[in-house]
Image (cartoon, rainbow, N blue to C red; front, side, top):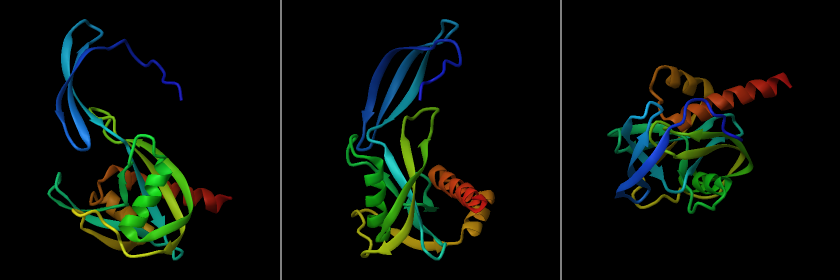
Length: 190
């Protein structure tokens, strides 16, 4: 999709790597604003991108994972997700792998729901979000060494309530659940 020019020109005149991490790199950009002023902006570069997957059981229940998130210092309720193994890996492969690793389920039908940019103010991370249907349980979870993930099955309406109560705040999870609700409504109309 071609990007539309929506405003006056902002020019990046410099980028300095401040810190290189395992998943992201932190930069400081020097930019010239339309009025000629120079500013320093923080930029976080996500190295590979990610995929997330909303698994729907034949019963209609949604598979959710509860995991501890150090950035928030609390447990969160989310859809399974993870980083691509390389910048060349198709995100559908990532989504299938994460579903299998985190839940033990494999999908006969995988459909892209959304493409997200998670935090556009300072980060270029993208997450492709998939819907997984016609699931079969293949095995136990196969988690990374540092992962502690509990599986839960939820009704869509209960998850929607948690979103509107502010209890589910994870952007990929909120987006996936709301997009799924819209998709179900469209399916009912057809």
